[in-house]
Length: 209
Image (cartoon, rainbow, N blue to C red; front, top):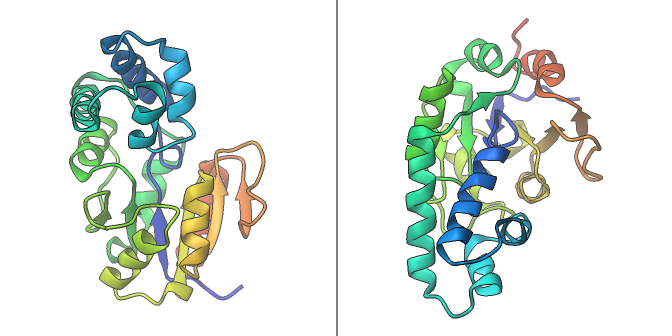
């Protein structure tokens, strides 16, 4: 395989375990609307927030629904418990500072808050939901990251856990590896059951022992 010089990481589910946090946020949101938490969360796992609101609370104003969700997410960043996946901190510290970035569907201030809480090092570049007009599975987020890093998409390795992120990276013309899922995505170039297992291979691609 041709050596890849840049690494672009998804955040939630890839570097950090935030499943329980997302569940708590959606349960709190559902309670404010008199809805059953598990039912709302099941929909939220499959759809974007605006689509979730339309499905579970069609009579509510989408702007108010989103404002409440954002407030709950911000509160969770301040008070919730987060855990980085094994090997994440050592991997990020070992990468050249100008050769990796975060590409997330979340917002930068939340990512920074979570990283500070878990002690993960931050890169110089974070492409978040406010950075692009189209989110994953569009290739725009990963292409934007490559452009800002001055990288050819063909020289970028994407590390993901979610199908939408895999599609985003593939359509951007990048190599995509998946981690932290029991089964590989059928279109990903390579799969590792955990980030820790992927770490030495990621470092090898950027020329680090």
